[in-house]
Amino acid sequence: MKNKSKSVAFAGICVALALILAYIEVLLPPLFSAVPGIKMGLPNIIIVFLLYRRGPVFAGIVSLLRILLVSMLFGNVMALLYSLAGGILSLAVMVILKKLNALSPVGVSVAGGVTHNVGQIMMAVLLLDTVQIGYYLVVLAITGTIAGIVIGLCGVLLVKRIPQKLI
Image: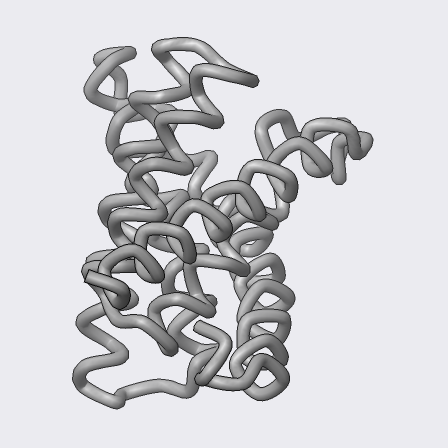
């Protein structure tokens, strides 16, 4: 029972940290004012860390809770749909690549960043009933790659610096 309580408490801490990072991201000025909707994805630092430290199920639970709470606190139903599409696809790709040991953690994070954008574009195509929005993916792939590198480096740093016995 103690281990289950510890896991629930740790998940709560991780969700809270992801929410704090999401709030910080909301407060930051847009990265590229000419390109709407681009964010760094700071809460994904926690997800990358958890994927490598606690595994895909734990990372998935925290990711889902984070998406739901961030959408309720800082977004709306549309934000929830876009975030779910991006988050689910991103996590699935990161889990597969990690399992295949195909890329470094930073490479896995980059793939996650780019596929998060792909998921959001797929949702936009579905909701807006136009494939023209797909052209936006070129810009999002570039920014997703940059963000994925930064997020991956931060996640790796956390994995190296936070002792296993604390989690």
